[in-house]
Amino acid sequence: MHSSVTLTLNGESRVFEGPADGPLSVAALLVLIGLDTRKVAVERNEEIVPRSRYAETWLVSGDSLEIVHFIGGG
Amino acid sequence: MDGSIAPEGQAADDTWTVAGRTFRSRLIVGTGRYKDLEETGRAIEASGAEIVTVAVRRVNLSDAGAPMLQDYVDPKKYTYLPNTAGCFTAKDAVRTLRLAREAGGWNLVKLEVLGPPPLLYPDMQGTFEAAEALIKDGFEVMVYCADDPLAAKRLQDMGCVAIMPLGAPIGSGLGLQNPAMLTMIMENITVPFLVDAGVGTASDAAIAMELGCDAVLLNSAIAHAKDPILMAKAMKAAVEAGRLAYRAGRMPRRMGADPSSPLTGLIR
Image (cartoon, rainbow over all chains, first blue to last red; front, side, top):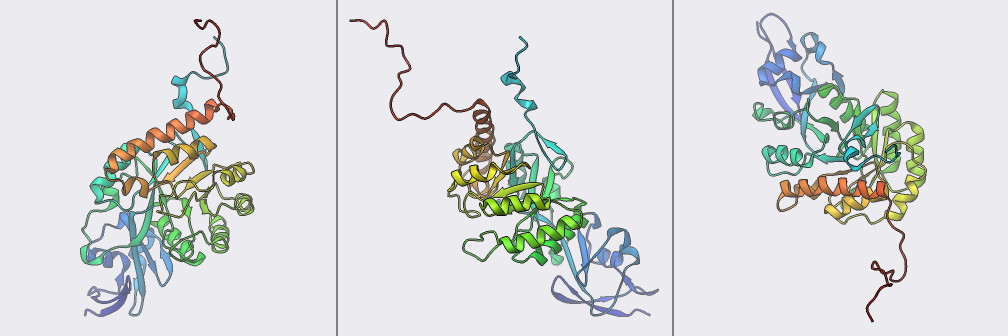
């Protein structure tokens, strides 16, 4: 059975369907959004999620995530 | 000849080193405020810069496939120097650079903690706090700061790897308003010393280099020029010219004329 997860992503509330076989990981979330994991960084509840742990970092409703990348700046 | 003065052709060996990394170009350029990413890439190429500053911002989740800076400014070719632009507290600056380190794996960063508009003047209290936290966390911190000799020395003593006071407010293009103070600060600084902010045109960059700065950091002066690519070339030439002039050592100033042509042998 799918369970929905409500997350705050970059300040916006979004609802995601978790996978049938378990909770939603950061890795799975990035695939759902369509992001290249090599070019972003993720912070969950104000703590960095190391890239090596995306697959085993489980998200629960109420989590707040910041997903950032590099843009032009001086 | 076995002279100790290197011929001009060896200027390519006139490198500078920050945090163990050695560079030939003494121009660091920002990647912001360009018309588009394509222009950003071309301007940076024309500037000859080897280090580029970059900002860390939220991904636009509604357009996840949009082109990214890395597609136009190759991180393998240029050293990315993540900044903390837009951070008004030490906490935000440290948080931003931790994310930058995770996104790119870089320890070398540009710290700036700013006061409110319209001046965006360096907030030195916040800068000290952030520098301390970042250095403790293993970062190599190039720090934007006020043109304050005591603050600059203190930041160096804390372990910052480059001291980068402003020549004028960020994006003002006013040119160096404080050359005498910059020179006095430099006397007590042994790590690389850069002017960061205030450069408006090529002569400003040349002046910074003639003062003896190790490098110059600028963004708007190129990005907001009518022709950014041409201005990028001008900045490259100006930084090189200023550096050569510094190494050459300028003639003394004198209050009066000193004729260049001999006064002997004049016709009567």
